[in-house]
Figure (cartoon, rainbow, N blue to C red):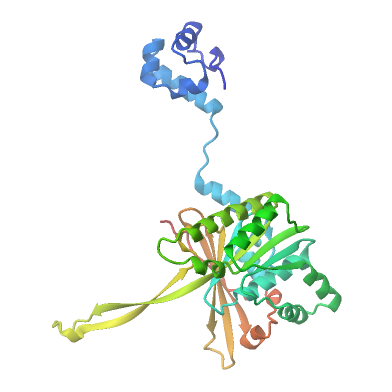
Length: 361
């Protein structure tokens, strides 16, 4: 601990330091923690002089003040990113998915979450020496589906084999197994060479058994999983993608309608209001660094059976949404169902971007 010396300030003379030492104030920390009024009485210094000494010591030893907003902005700008292989998505996310953090892919059923995860796995495996750990919790991972995507993108059989070899599949059925897997990865009992991306499809499937009021077991497992996941992301420089489910709720509100100034019992009508929630509870809401909200919409302007997948990119901190970007990925329903969506063919010009202002509170 730093000893209080005369070099700290001109007011700290030999007699002042001896007086402080007699009152057991010998270090910089003890001087700063002591009441300024008491120090003034002991040292015979005026209160402004004592405060001047404290300010000089703080400026010398204290860490510089950094605004949270600027720190968050600098982190987003300097972070390393994993290219998704989708030019429009990379442009919207500032270079790709953040490495060292958890990214969530969220949406309603049949919104294309698994399709996006498969493409992310392919993009990571083909563009670098990194391997992908694909954790399947639903038991529906299809190598044939991956092969169809690769075939639609024009890869040879040799290239397909090399890419698919880099995607390591693990089937997990319970939260206990998931936590144990991440514990082994953390402790080095289990290792995947050149691991660059971990995909969990999906996390709510393991948490459904713990749903219910007052059930703390699931929260305990989720908290342990988050701690292991964050450690792996930071220490091994890994990008992690967790698939979450979005639920849709319809609230029916009574709205009174006035007719010619007279109100009757028939003046109330029921207007349904749609509300969408992310699963996994309030604890999970601010765990991911980035959330990709996916929604599929039918294109009513076209006579053909077509759909558009809208993806909203939301970057979160502990209390607010910093920014949101929305772009559209056009795709035909027939190609989507066959597993041959050519996401990589899209360019930034083909994506429609809507940049929202920061929303605080």
